[in-house]
Length: 64
Image 1 (tube, rainbow, N blue to C red):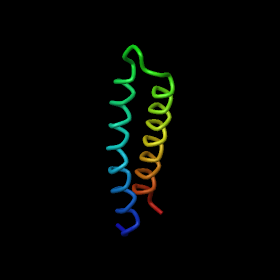
Image 2: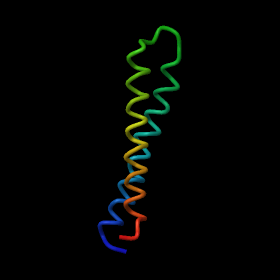
Image 3: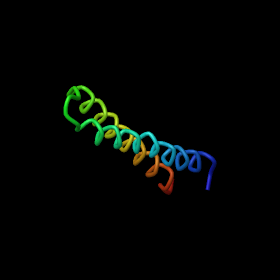
């Protein structure tokens, strides 16, 4: 396994931590009195972190 693949796998794993933070923020922003901007922001960030994490895992596992 090359160093680049290992780096992609590590990056994919590291990106799961901010995704978990955004998931917590998304769930916590459902309380009354919170602006819709926080809900939207946490949701978009969560989708981005998960998407990039999946891409990194795929690049790390791919056989090329």
